[in-house]
Amino acid sequence: MKYPATFTPADEGGFVVTFRDIPEAIAQGDDEEESLKEAQDALVTAMDFYFEDSRPVPAPSKARRGERLVALPLSVSAKVLLLNAMIERQVGPSQLARLMGIKPQEVNRIIDLGHNTKIDTVANAMAALGRELDVVAV
Image 1 (cartoon, rainbow, N blue to C red):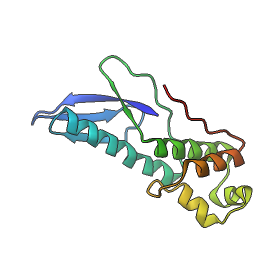
Image 2: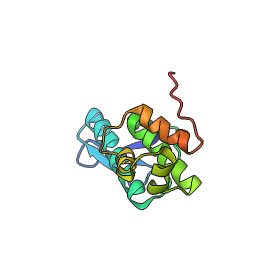
Image 3: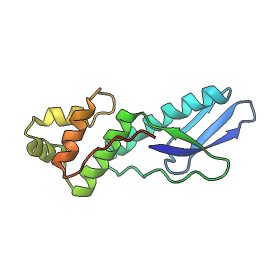
C-alpha cells in the first residue's frame, strides 16, 4: 500500500508532508530524507486511529503530479487489509476468533499494529473471512 504524499517546503526549512487519502498523517523533516522517514512513521501512526475507531482505511489513490508515494510496511498493509475485511463483513474480534478457532486475545494481537504477527497468521485470518491474502513482487 503506497499512499500519495505532498512534500511542501516549510518556511523554516525542510518539508511538511501531507496525505490526501489519510488526512490524519502529517509529518515534517529538516530535509527530504528525514521528511520521508517521518512521513512513513506518521502514516503508520495514523493507521492506529482507524484501528481504534474500527473505521475502514481508505485505499491509496493514484499519485497526482508532484506527489510522491510513501509505502506502509508490508506487515501493516496486511493488517489494514484485514481490518477492512472485518469491517466489510461486519465481523468483530470475538467472532473472528470463533471463525479461526482461537482465543479472542490472539485476534487482538493479530490486529494490533504494534505486535509482530506472522504473515501466515494474517493470511489465516483473511481466509476465515473468505478472503485470500496475496503477496506480489513487482
